[in-house]
Length: 221
Length: 65
Image (tube, rainbow over all chains, first blue to last red; front, side, top):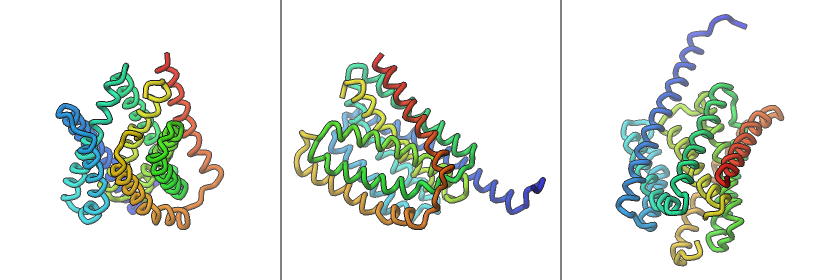
């Protein structure tokens, strides 16, 4: 084994560390911004319809606008607009769970649980530097299956199916945290704006479905 | 979900269907061209995911008191 790294290896490692650092910084700021807009939605009593439009708008932003600006400073504005709309869209859902008996404890537990799962999995992928990109096919096919099951359950409205979907999403998002973090660590993702959006969506979906899962399993949903 | 108006159910279903359609090429790319994991790779992924399941089970037990 060589006792020193080549200049190219050092440059690569520095670039990876910079992407990781910028991603975590932007992720923290966008999550805080989302918390602010979610609070705004709750204080102003945003309607479920308004929340749905905000969520659809956020997804449209990352599909149609972000790919055009992800390599420029304008990309930062789009990411914050996306995070703000996602937070606003979450407002009525949070209000629903907060109104349940023991609701604040439930929401705080889901929030803490999401934070612990994200930090644990992200630290695992960063410290081991393992490449989890082999999970890509499994995770994305799993997401499509979950989306199709969700469409079916909109019309079937089977509570057990809704619970199974949330359990599957929690596992898929946990896998995606490993996948997305390892792609940053191993140089597969070099754009911190794209990396932030990917991790943001992992955390957002993990939180929403963990909240649903905890509410149902403790018998209050 | 039961009390959602039909048009809203259809709109949401169309939106989710569009998401699945957008994800399809991504899933196909990673399935066909993504790296294949060894048994050791899968074990390294399954262990932390099993710990997540255990962690959630503990939270549920704590919430139930």
